[in-house]
Image 1 (tube, helix red, strand yellow):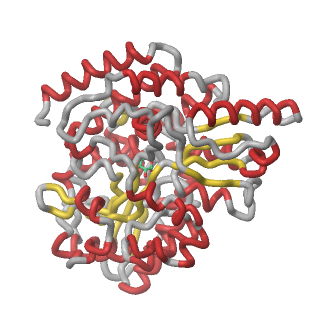
Image 2 (spheres, helix red, strand yellow; image 1 turned 135 degrees about the vertical axis):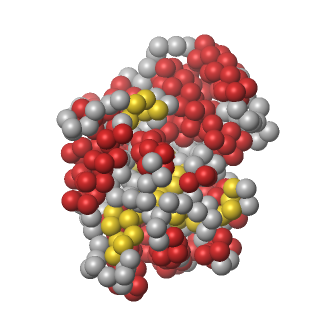
Length: 458
Ligand code: GLC
């Protein structure tokens, strides 16, 4: 839990709040809307060495790894790195990182700018390989074909200019969590359209509030202005038939009536079935409300399943997982997420670091993480594994959703992806918070993305 202690003390959910809480860190740099600073890096490393350092005896080589995102990720990663340390005699240190992927990227970019050898192995969001390609080692010579056991689409995503820059570690897709017990109580079933979801959420929420739970909400999701909102809003837009922001050929497609309808629908939830606080929710905020028993529905990634079924969870055995709803005549859409592991080019021990990556991404480690932490494997064969399916029944029922998840336009926009995503999440946030009408927000987004496109090579 060390990593979480540091997070809650200093990094919270975004860099800005970390800067507020940690007085020795001054904000002096603004990177694509993420306020960060040069001292942050030193601070994080100090924290990692002092508190976040976990790992073994001084023997062999020391490898520093950053591998915790949300949920139990850090605990599982540490367990696996401990095993590797025992096997190899090398030592592993864990670098503590913030929770939000947008903040993690800001930090890594600072470390890359300094060509820092302070971290050897990093977790890489599925949308990053094109963006940070020049700082990652080609793992091809170390993988020796092991990548062939993984989903080809992920290997393709992680292969840039012919180099295998990252090994798939776990995949993600947005899913709808619902309260089986409450839907049964009110004679409702899991919704297949956003309109049904809205109506059921309202009915059950109102009923439960009347019955005495004043905190009951209808729907919680990730509405903060960060990458998680890009994932949610892409699902709304794509499931209304409004495309995926930028198409595969690089054309900006987001300014269309279906996208406007999708954003209008979502804006209608704020203050009705969703608390206004959702405008500042990341994954763990949504999970906190749902797992306490205070929401009928939740949009989240699969990691939330194992936690919701933990022995201490108030909603244990009361949760179902289905596809996210569709808009009108559209088709349900789940954004493709997930994490990879890479070796930083500036590592002083690239071969040992690559060995750790190969171990962490191996079938045995992925199977263990799937069973105990509901992290979706990136190896198709594990979706046939009885123990994996028993622990996560929806890995079987939603298999098609996982393999057909909608990618964010990271490949088409390359190094500009984060800028594109930030413009999109800001536009969505403006609409959700009632500061702009969907049509206006999409029109300015279109103009902004057009500018980015003209200034870039895509
Ligand atoms: C999850 C996904 C990742 C996504 C992030 C957004 O961690 O795996 O791909 O970018 O959520 O918050």
